[in-house]
Structure formats: structure tokens, C-alpha cells
Length: 406
Image (cartoon, rainbow, N blue to C red; front, side, top):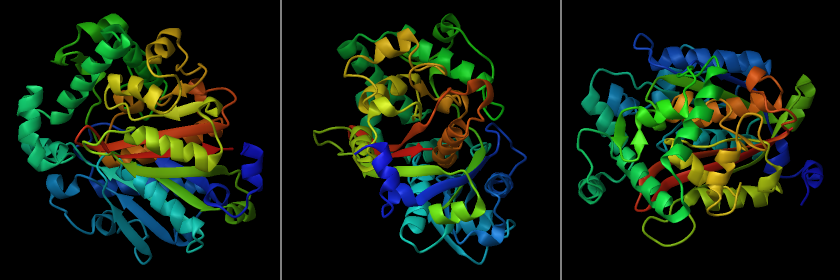
């Protein structure tokens, strides 16, 4: 199926839902701001960008992963966070799916519109991680895997109990990729160098200072082979996305960004088979009629620099074993064949857990509308987001892949 034929296929999700507007706070550490403060800013910006007023929003999918364990708000998180936005009185659904919470909320909002149940919907991802209780933060992060598995993971990986188990999981995967595919620490450092350069061009990024490969390699070691800049930071932030039917966008004169696919799958745990990101991507490509070679700009879940390289292969951007060639040749830089993490990714934009999935959509929409400034990938018309969440067995617990186009 060609992109042209998708445009003509008026009856499916991939043509009837469009992104009308996006909004996002800066990402960083803002101890003075509450989740409500962050949500209000992101929602307000998305409404302005879409040209909608709050009364036009019929449905809200609110994503948050940590407010229960970090702030004690275990239930009705969206209703509480949004009560000063004017959104009370319509349907609000709370979404939690670990680091993939934001992209899952985006899918829920898209499906509400695709089903015909709503004409205009909103996805919001909000996370507040800058709490003084470091023990609560550690518990929150480790809850991204099966709690009962943590002791055995610590023992198997030789991990420390005073840091998130996820850095040990990612480091273990990195060492395996190095042995299997010839990746080097310099390759991981090149990912960070690329990321920080993109982040330096993004006024909403948490880290905006470029770094060199040598600076990345000489930084403090977290767990071999990961140095501190190779690991995504914790922080606070929110992002929001207004979606609506194509007909509603036409009536409003909005130049739409079409939602071609939003596919979600869980990992297979300890079972053999393709990883979750691979399977979600294959489903999204099939649904959208887009091939990996059609993608101009992508946002991927680079919780570590090593994860980004693995996703080049999982998403079909290169053949298995060829990720190093992409990063070494600069093919995934802002002006490369496929600009990967042009907004800085998790490594530089930051990773407020549930906000990340929606923030990826914000960056892609800015790219497709040609308003990304100095980090603009020229000629971008097709974009992909991959957002992973949690860990179960030998794979991400969940993966969401979205494809957008003009």
C-alpha cells in the first residue's frame, strides 16, 4: 500500500485522526512546580497551538506513572491534576504503562476519535520526579519491572541495591551488543554527542550543553560500559497533544498531521521471539503502508545511548549488526538520512517518565510542520515514534510505535 492510497482510504484510523496541536513544558528539575502546574502549562499550550478552546475537548487520556508512589496520589490523578484547567466535566481516563504511559495515552485518545465516539480528544503526559525522598524514587523506578524479580535481577547482574535496576539491565544488553555486533564505547559516546548537539538546539531540553566523545568517555562510570552522560536523567515535565477527526480539522482550517498508526504490544517475557519494539514497528508499518526507508525523522526511547543503537535495528532502520555504521557515518544526525532524536531524546531532552511519549509526538509534529528551527530535518514528511515501558523477563514490558505524516 502506498502513502497515496492511505490518503484515499477514508474509513480507517490511519486517515481519520489528525494531530491538531501540541504543547510542552521545558523538561528539568523544578521542585517548586506541582504536577498540576506542569499539566496546566502543557494543556494551555496545546490548546493555543490547535486553535481550540477548552470547551471543545470532549475526552482526556491522562498519563502518569509515579504520582502514587512519589506523591501519594494513587487514584484520580488526572482529575486532580487537571481540576484548574477547565477540563473537569468531561471524560478523563487515567493511564499508567511505565515509561510508555504517554504514548499509550496518545493511542487511547486517537482511538476515541477513530471510533467516532469523540470529535476532539486530548492526551496529556505528566511526571514529577524531583521529590527529596530518593528511596521513593528508587522504588518507583524499580516498579517498572516485576517487584518479585528484583532480587534475582540484582544477583544475576551483580547490581547495586542503591540504584535503579534498569541501568544494570541496559548495561548488560550493551555488553551483549558489543560482543555480538562489534559496537564500542566510542559508538555509544557518538550517540550522546549527537543527542547533546540536538538538545542544545531545543529550548525545552533538560541538557543544552554540547559534549564531545572524549568528554562522554571520561565521565563517571555508572556501570560498565555506561558513563553518566550515556544514561537518561530524571526530571519533571509535561506534554500534551490535541487530536481530532480529519473533518473537524478541515472545518477549522488546520493543516493536519495525520496519525497513520499507533500500535502497542507487550514483550514476550522469557519466551523466544522478536522483541516488543520490533513487533510493534512491524504492525505499525503494515497498518500505515510506510516502510522504514520512508521515515525522515524518528523519536526513539534512548533511556541509554546503547538502547538507541539497538532500536536502529529493531525498527528496521538498518540490518541486524549495522547500527554502528549508521552512527559512525552520521546518518542519524539532525541532517542525516533519518534524523533520530532531533529533540535531544531522553538523553538530553530528559525523561519525566509518563511525559516522554507525548513529548516525542510534540517533536515530530514540530518537525512535520517545519518549525523545529535549527534542528529541522529538511523535507520531513514521515515520522516515527517508539516508546518503551518497563522490563519483564528478557524484553521491554511494552512498546508503542506511532507513525505520523503530512
